[in-house]
Every structure is written in C-alpha cells, then in structure tokens.
Image 1: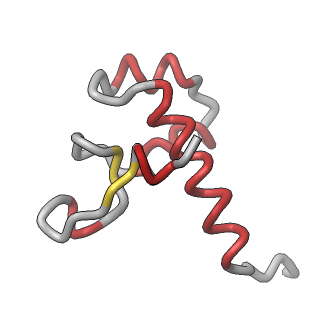
Image 2: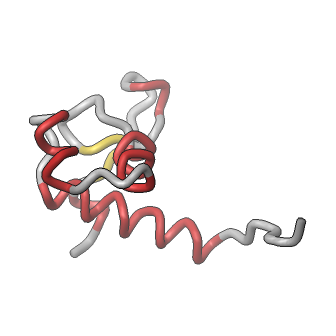
Length: 75
C-alpha cells in the first residue's frame, strides 16, 4: 500500500494538516483513536467517510514520519 493514495494535504482543508483523502478527518484523529485503543471498525463507525484502507494508510504515514525524525526518549 502506498499511503500517498489515501492521504492528502491541502492548505484550504484543516489548515493543511494531513487528512484522509476526500474527507476532513485528520490523520492525527485516526492515530489518536488507535492509540486510545479503538479498533479500525470503531473508527470507521465514528467517521463513515473513512475506509479501512484510510486507517491503514494513517499507520503507514506515521511509520514514515518515525523513520524521518528522532524523538528523544530519555527522561
């Protein structure tokens, strides 16, 4: 899967934040829901314009960002 097929960024939509294509559902909303323990089915139920592929693409997008950037883990 190429996440670019499912995620877009448009300055006129959600201030240019990454969204699931064709929606105003930001990738961060999908990731926050997954991190909160919600299943893909629950997310799709809450956001009917989002597909299973859109949820999967959000995960691929996050993985891509994690490869490009380091966040200090030491406390």
